[in-house]
Length: 146
Image (cartoon, rainbow, N blue to C red; front, side):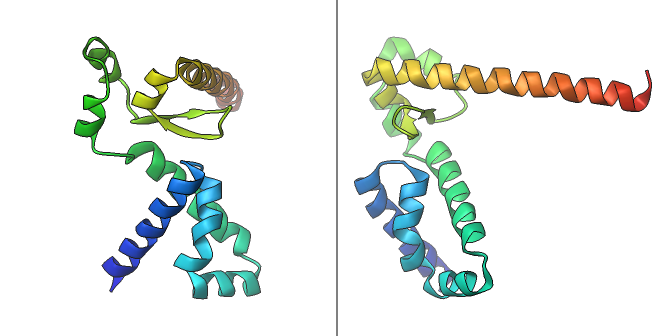
């Protein structure tokens, strides 16, 4: 029974993704009530509807980023000279800020302006993470007194 419910959930997700692309928020909004009618109703009554929605969005964002397609199929869509570079990537898709969703690497290759957007976004997020880590280092040193 659980497998049937999961299968139904992913069927709904795939149908919504065909319409909304890999936008986790739009897909979540399109499927959450159909997939989880009792839970959605209960969460609304209990005031936890935002938490349920945020959880589904987080799950879908991770799903879209890491399980977009069969990696063998994607490799067929990547020009041979680029495959060694693409093989170094940890994800099959990357966030393109201008379109608000994760885009598979072969699509990024076919749309260099999206690839440029994705790499700039990732670099900016990396720099923000390094800046935050530096502040945490400072806090740790202050806490430990050395």
